[in-house]
Image 1 (cartoon, rainbow, N blue to C red):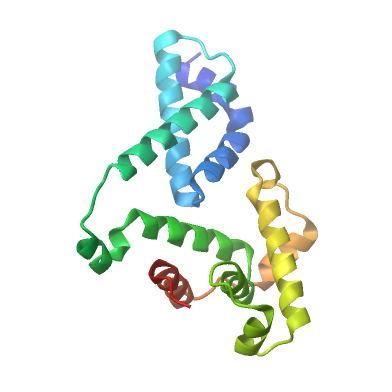
Image 2: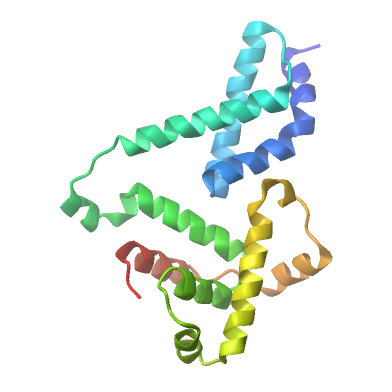
Length: 195
């Protein structure tokens, strides 16, 4: 049997869990896929060199975690002069993090839910202020915020990421992704700390 086939058979049952863990570590589906691919490559090299693969899930968790720690250390070591960072915010690692979080939120929440959540949790708007700006009632704001937080809590747990209820599928079909300018506007506001 080919080494790749044996490796694939050992890893395949754990792939869903490793993918969810990579998503948890990176908070961005694109970075998670890159991390998953790199972890699989390192695990295959280990398997090829040693000829054995004991506890593949534990090994892949450890490799992914170490790769993410190394990537974080590399990013942290990069120093950019303040005036240059302010002029080119799109190249700032914080921009990528902020944008990734907003893209993740917009996958699970509607545009209105995301906007309310940002206004309340990031910019400290009162319920009344949010209701005034978005032309709705205070109880509606409270209800939307409560549902949004619960939805994100459920999506934030790696072990729950694969389970989608019929209600969740229906909600996901109803809510279209926000337009790109909304993500750009939210990202720019968060980066600038504007209300």
